[in-house]
Length: 631
Ligand code: ADP
Ligand code: ZN
Image 1 (cartoon, rainbow, N blue to C red):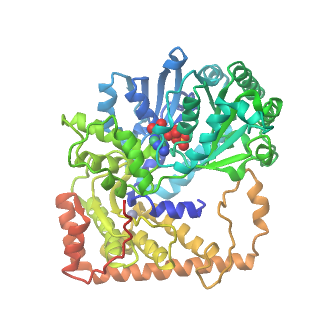
Image 2 (cartoon, rainbow, N blue to C red):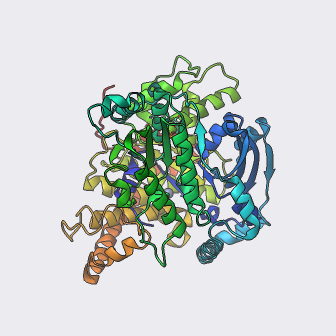
Image 3 (cartoon, rainbow, N blue to C red):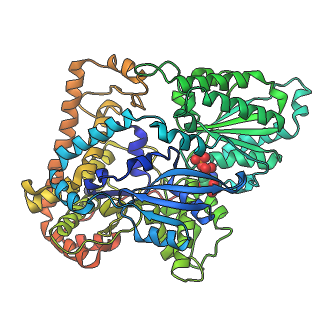
């Protein structure tokens, strides 16, 4: 896994959690892969929940112990046409989700994994070799049957692909978009282009054809595009780049043609292309030949964009999270020559988004939106919308009159870490997980530069069997070397506790995820931030992702083999010395850890304040400097 600075930031910016991951999750034997592969379109979990609430979901098939669902939903805007989509779920055939599906009256089918439980138990002991083999097997199979798959599926596939969607009126206004003021201001002008083009053409101005919205998922790019159409009172055409990728040669190009033809008939209007990077990637950069279909689609798109005059009244808005991979031809003048950044909201922005989405919700008097905004650093607009919706659902299920802070808290946990599972019964595994989590939390409490512990819990969520939550600082724009080392130690805390308490031979796979994060952070300290003996060398660029072979080429020239060895040694040194310090913390605090583990097993959850108080009876707990923005 390659790590970018974004990932390091991600590690800290949302409410930080370190889970005890059971690797079993990643390779449950799946049943009926044919049926699962039939849905090539993916839908996010959040969108699935929205569809479910809107009553659009008709059928749900759960596979892989509830980790994957094939969902059939109807589209009321397109004569209730049925779409089949694949959704990755938090997993475990969660009773909560199943209840909710049953309540909504969808046609539910749960496909049992072939002989699942027994095999899983056995397999977790052989985890590494088997994981590797199974991983290779799946990889192989996937690439072998890439694309739409066998002949039998082709028809289904053609049928389920949304051509493009048209909304005569989006009904979305700028008021519905919050927390991204700069982007909104920039786009206000586009509304005028659509409504009063003559104002610009009269003085000889060329109206821009394309606007590229750049930002992470869920920040409101689609919503903004819809709001432009809504404010201007024009129709909204939309299509997603990812839908072209697996198509047969020629289909994508003809869809693009159709789309522009329809748009011209309905001008003035907005064409929205989501995930444009899926079609718009740099051409000719593939390993072993390019993707003909993608290139043809892209060429068609460029031709269409050049083929109409700026004053036709069509404005194309495209969204991406990876502007760096786009073909430069797309960014030339007369095409997508305007770029607008749409970022995850800051605390003030989050407060505004919460304001928009709480308009139609019933809130109890104890709810303070600014408290929620403080608790949700790193949340996107979509996460916040989802949070309030989940809280509302919990409120209804608990038969309460209005949403209270309890529902909000539960919903935050759920949005960040997935659905709640059933706690393990007391036993050796549970003790081990408890020590592991307390290990993380001890570092979080005793190391000055670590974010403070918010809570430690043994209630499983998503794939994690236990979780330690940290409260991140709002101001994360710069991260110091000490903070990075503290985070590395924090991530190592789980493993260190396992080793000190149970012995070197009893350490478990549960620390796998932690260790991966550690490797990523330590490596970036060396290669990107000049924080090692190697000095101030920047040896890797921000997105070291090998992209269709392009990265491979430019990469090899970056540093010599001698430097590569030095990098490895420097990374090792950071990890080793951090681990040694972490082990010392565990050895010196054995007594309080035993007490905390007993308490954790008894209560399942300990909150941060209580945790600190107990530790303070045994050791000196450093004061942490926090940045608290005023609202
Ligand atoms: P993107 O296109 O950037 O992935 P979307 O526009 O699809 O994100 O956002 C999904 C949903 O999340 C929206 O329909 C809206 O309910 C909510 N949302 C996201 N960003 C915002 C925002 N800035 N203001 C209000 N709601 C938002
Ligand atoms: Zn851990």
